[in-house]
Length: 408
Ligand code: DNO
Image 1 (cartoon, rainbow, N blue to C red):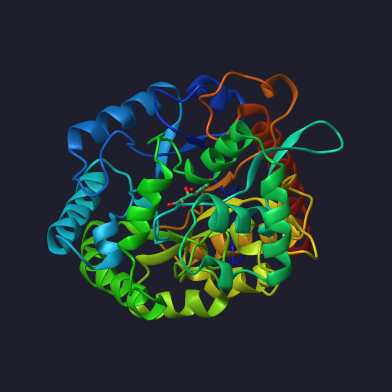
Image 2: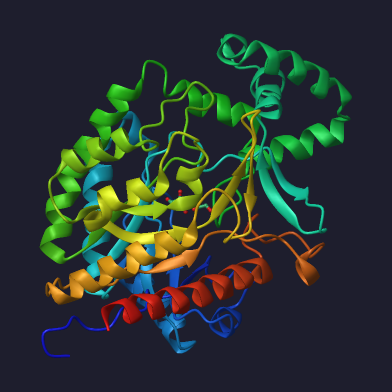
């Protein structure tokens, strides 16, 4: 090795696990070829401290299956912090306490997002592809129907493209009551790992909390969050990783501030610290045609602490579908090459936190997973993710080989 950097490394391969209630057991995750788990304590209400004992139990459960809990996805941010209203100081200090407890248990990478009210949004979670597998889709016409006709949000009419608005009215009229119910559930039941059974009325109440909150105010609230938690993260060795908005544009009149290259630059500037980083989700970012995903990865590389590898196919009407991990608008080989080289650079530089864990984000629903009883978070059935992981691992081996070959 004299004078030469160590050979290109393996990115740690992860899989999301929603905890003991997840219909996909840890043993299957291990058989899928993952070594690490991205998990969260979904049973703890947002805004409360995660007790160290609960963290330990989860860690030991994962370890006893021969895996490692390396990434927390997510420690959710309470709406009080995002809105800057309510008991913000207590929520912030609880968050900081959770980071301390996680670090005390040896878990150092923490994913979070700053999306108001909803997490990810799709208009169909079970769209059948020509080969019979199922995927998730966002269709702006259907979303306009949700906003205008189901939610009946004041002002919604004027925020949608007039063409989409007309088509939305026509489409909405074709749905039966039960189709409407299923459609609405698919949009508002988007919180990974939990089923809150929210109603449209709950969504209206949550939306009302954002009255008067625009992007600059939301940004200010994120900056305040970072001001408090980044010093604690630095002290205990935690790396914070903000997840991009999904989709990366405003929905329901709510501001979204983690969608573009400028957004990421602004967040990086809010707290100049390696602890203030990103969970780089290629799928989320790719749903916006003006995002150059590879360029963004390169621009923020030193701050990338965790990675979601996923792909999308965009249509000219503004809709997008989640595609196979190696198909779609994100060109995965250079993404993996850049990540492997960055990991190598960190190791050579002696950067203590050199590992960049990734997971296949979502997967198509296919084969025996089609028609399985409900209980699986959309996008998180086993086989489609296993396929994604297998493809990504194969690609990674090829990219490693070519990096080595180039160095030789
Ligand atoms: C969707 C996920 C997101 C992500 C959170 C991070 O499948 O990628 O829900 O976990 O936004 O806080």
